[in-house]
Amino acid sequence: MPGRICVLLVLLCLVSFCRGSEKPGEVLLVVACPPYPLQARNECSALSHSVLEQQRALVLAGIFSGDFVLKVHVMHELFNYWTLVDALPHLRAQARVLGARTEWIIWCQHNTRVTSLRGLLEQLRRQDPRELSFYGHALYDAEATIIHHFSNYQDPQRFPYPMLSAGVVFSGALLRRLADLVAPNGHNISLHSDFSIDASHELARFIFDNVSPHPHISTPISGGIMLKGASYICPTAASVPHRKVACVLHAQPEEPLTSLGQRRNGCQHTTGSHIYFAIKTCAKFHKERIPIIERTWAADARNRRYYSDVADASIPTIGTGIPNVQSGHCAKMMAILRLSLKDIGEQQDIHWLMLVDDDTLLSVPRLSVLLCRHNASELVYLGQRYGYRLHAPDGFNYHTGGAGIVLSMPLVRLIVERCSCPSASAPDDMILGYCLQALGVPAMPAAGLHQARPQDYAGELLQLQPPLSFHKFWNTDPEHTYRRWLGGSLVNRSAPLAPHQEQPAAGPLHTMMGRHSLAAGVGLLQETGLGKHLDL
Image (cartoon, rainbow, N blue to C red; front, side):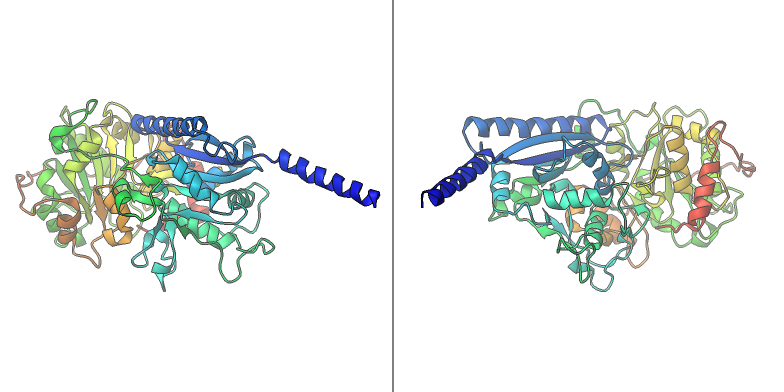
């Protein structure tokens, strides 16, 4: 009997020792911070400071002192960190950041706001960190869309994906599983596409395709892990008073657009007259598309030129000497840039050039406000950022052409001098991005530029950020789109296009870029079939 008592006492001591040695779970808050513009970097610092100040207040008050250890990690974005899946190897490589004891990871962007750290920790206490799960404000597609590769085309409204800027909460179990999947020795990974278009949807799709809800099954059979909608994560601050559950995370507009008369200090005075709009068209669309531009945003774009495969004096269009092709317009783009430089000449008031398709709609006043925050004397490359093979060493970022590509004038001159096309029909936007990455010019994303139509985006995203552009006229009323989303009158207030003095047709393109040869890029394009790149 005494022996049994001794054994019982030993067991009780062991249990007591184990309980005493238990450490509080770690909560990791990651701020994915872009290197530009300065405003974004400042917002990253402010977010980190705000969370740490809230943590100090909780510690002083003795709240959650024994439950959680909070760590804040500002992850300064490299060229491919804007996609969370591609950022995971970085977090996994740093054991001090994502460790075995990390129970929760709150993924934030620079424009995410943590309104109540206490409320967030209270929510985490109610959730199981051992479960393979992630939580956020759920977005849904209204219809199958090309920007999501027509995913779930039979029922697109059933698949939720997170609003990244509102913040996403991952269990440590799920994020470690994802990190293992994308590790160099990972295998059997299902990637839907080599293109990175919408990091949010692609993240949700990657998790669904590769993570089973049953840990003992390596891949999903009847379906994988799906996002769980969280009422405490809201799309905007305005949603806070209307929720039964208090919002503790929400998004803030990336580029708050003030009126032209209320620009903040530090802005360089910019109007539509400082921007040269080089509009790419072709003969078969002269009568169909150009009149739509003339009835909409041309009113605010005095310096606009239509570049076509043929010269048409009735519009007028400027002939590039480059025949039209169905896909890939690299030679035409380079010809447009050279002819634009000749047309601009010595005009000192032209600070920017924007490459635009003939089925793109713009808000020139909003674009002007955006550009006032950038230095036109530097090498600036703005647009809607896409990525190609960002998981691989040969990957690169580029701005997709349909949304509109903005270039500072010094950069236009550099492109004409140093970039070239591997073939006349190579994808113009991708070749431009590849060349600029080789030259060390980053692809800076501009919030509000859109490669597709309004119905291709979740409504919360369009409400968060006033749109600057939309692309494609098919299956939509472009003039209604302009009135509804881009806020302009259909009355053309600008003077008619001035007759253009015809320049000689563009000559053959140079095949080399000085020391920046595109030979590697040519090989990549040929191997992957990007010479047949679709205009998304």
